[in-house]
Amino acid sequence: MDLFDSIKGRTSIRRFKQAPVPDEDIRKILDAGRLAPSANNTQPWSFLVIKDKETLKKMAAAVREMVDRMIPHAEEEKHAQRLAAYKGTYYTFFENAPVVIAVFMEGYDAGTNKLLGRMGYSAEDIMRLRPNPGETDVCVMWCSVEGEKDGHPARVDYWLWDQADTITGISSMGRVTGFSAAIAAWMLGKGMFPQIGVVAPEDCFDGPRYHTYVNELAKHDINILEEVTPVEPSGEALRQRLAR
Picture 1 (tube, rainbow, N blue to C red):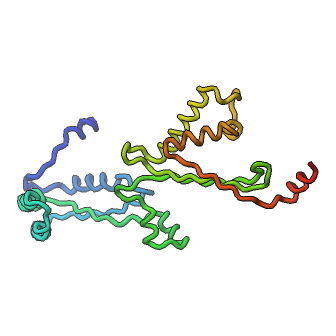
Picture 2 (picture 1 turned 90 degrees about the horizontal axis):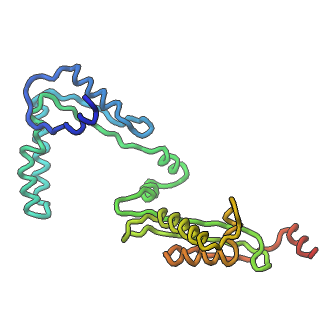
């Protein structure tokens, strides 16, 4: 059978014959599960084959007990009714199966978590670094250069912090890279770059062109802060200044 035909034709079975399932078929099913992809091939699962009817009844009884405890906490009456209806069928249909494969999952501890722990981060700090549902991305940039600013030795720090647009659904990475490229293309179309051929960005966005570029970004709420700090000139720079 073709793989895609098999995927499209699959159905959920909730009523079973009581004929025993051959051990050979069970091994094939387990082998398929074992070969499923996992991060770094950790395979953090184990399988338990359950054929004992008494054990299956106890499992189903435990599920019904938990559902009974959940029903009083349902937000709506309709939800409570659905829970009550499902506890005897949908949630426990496995009780009548000839065999059940229970899957146990180990918690996956990423290698980066261990590394962050050795760096001194607490478990709480590591969890805070993980993305949570509803959170969006941010783009952060810091670039520091030293040279001359307005004829005086200085260190110039450029800072950028941008957040995703939750209204349009555009990520911060999409905003920062997309608008930057679009503005550069617009400036190129306007003939603002006299250079021809492959030219480094720092040789294009200088003087008025740099300010045009930054101002256009600001129109889209992408702001670059420029912070200038005077510095003492190095020995070589000082000699060059005195030689002028």
